Length: 211
Picture 1 (cartoon, one colour):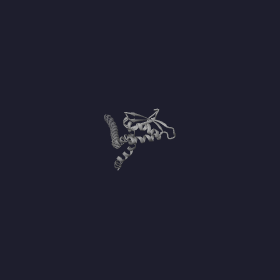
Picture 2 (tube, rainbow, N blue to C red; picture 1 turned 135 degrees about the vertical axis):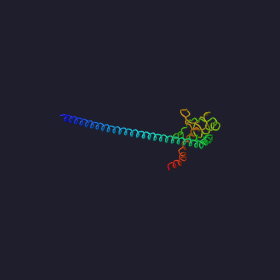
Picture 3 (cartoon, rainbow, N blue to C red; picture 1 turned 90 degrees about the vertical axis):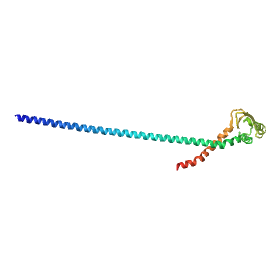
Picture 4 (cartoon, rainbow, N blue to C red; picture 1 turned 180 degrees about the vertical axis):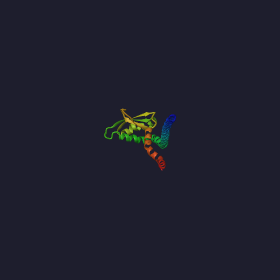
C-alpha cells in the first residue's frame, strides 16, 4: 500500500513538473516571439524615421538649390539691365540732347506735325506750341509768322522754364497736349535700342553658357 502511495505521489509530482516545464517553455516562447515582434516594429519605425529624415534633407537641399538658382538668375537679370541702361544712356542721352537743341531739327519736326495734323481737311488748324524758354528767340517768331503762313495754320507759341528741350503741341483751345520733350525722345530711343543692345551684349555669353 505504501509503495503504491509513493508511486502515485511520484507520478503526480512528475506530471506537475512536466506541466510546469511545458508552461514555462510556452511562456518563454511567447515572450521571445513578442520580443522579436517588438524588435521588428522598432526597426521598422527606426527605418521609417531615417527615411523621412533623408527625404526632408533632400527636400531642403532642393529648395535651397532652387532659391540659389532663382537668386542667381535675378541677380544676372539685374546686372544685364544695369549694364544695358549704362550703355544706352551713354549712346543716346548726348545725341538726343544735342538734337533737341538744334533749332532746324525742331523746326522740321514741328512742320511735319502741323502738315499732318489733319490731312483729311484743307481747313486751317489752330495750334498751340510750348517751347523751352531757351529756344523762344529762335523759334517763336518763325512759328507764329513764317511757318504759320506756309503751313496754313494758326500757331500760338508759349514758353516754359521747366522744359529742358523739345516741345509740346496741341489744339489752341488747350484741350490736350502732345509732348515731344527731350525726355520723351530719350525714352523712345532707349526702348527702341534696348532689345537689340541686350541681344548683342549677352547673346554670345548665353550661347557659351549653354555649351
